[in-house]
Image (tube, rainbow, N blue to C red; front, top):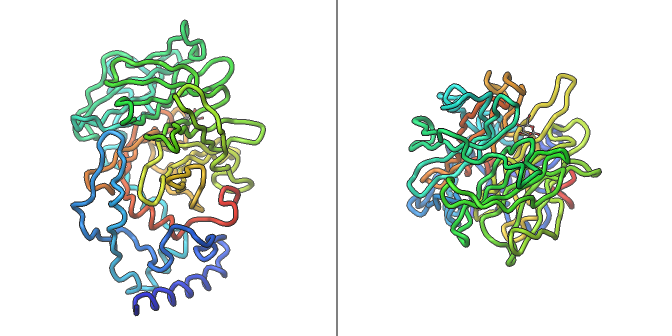
Length: 413
Ligand code: BMA
């Protein structure tokens, strides 16, 4: 009880301070009544978080679904013990780069590693296979400028990559004319119901980019389902299970309304409808103004679907691709529950800041560690190479609880 009173008192102090702080336009007390989140226990940084029963934390290797018990077992130790420190960490924007740590071996894959001549290797779809290997289905741009997909496998997901000696999935413009300018940016979701991996990728042709789908059991042979979202559309990934009996696809059409993230539903993966916007690009001076898109596939947690998305800032010197965080309702993934105010990861390392397209970090997949908390985010850097950054889902939730916007319509800040 004492703890609850202290926590409430401390939250009031934070809120009073937040009202004076123009850099934080929204605070937790502004959330709608009935929200699903714990209002009493303030979040703490990862170093303060302990799992009561870490043995209950499991992951399902292929679709990376996190056990629903994973996040419920978090205990926060003495969150009020150092209010000054907590204030510094949580009432201001959390240092973005502390949320993900770049791997010292970065870039982990580049054209130098490729068994055949290519221009660049980036924006890989990711999955952990049954045998424990991490598979990166890389977008590979050849020296014609067009892209195909090629699989690289590794036991530790960091090095020792075994790369297919030839393209794994190539454009087939004779049968699929929408692929005449190549195929790009795959996102992989394991569908337990079908016992297959669904690969959503961008097919590129005169009509513009569109979303195509292919199914595979082994990343050797693929069954193409063809175009599932017409141009202009990209940045798509399936959810691993049906919602209300329907498959769900998150994607990013570009329309006269702008480049926002949508969700669509299908009974059979071929016929799609019930299209809805789930996250809008902000406007004006925001880091994610005008154009956003899904990065890696949604991560299923007991608090909801955790989504990493990219925001594109247009500047006089070109675009900057940064990453943001949002949370969507587990049963209604078209409902956004929280959205981070600022970006969580931004081009900073030399391989992110210079390359074929400078100032780009672009993940298309992740794996979750055996602890159920570690997130291994694989991202294309400057459209040139593949890199790895590691974070903690628990810390991302903690950050989101203290750096999220909300209101009557959280999609339109
Ligand atoms: C996007 C996509 C990505 C690419 C990014 C930066 O529109 O085409 O494949 O990484 O631009 O060039």
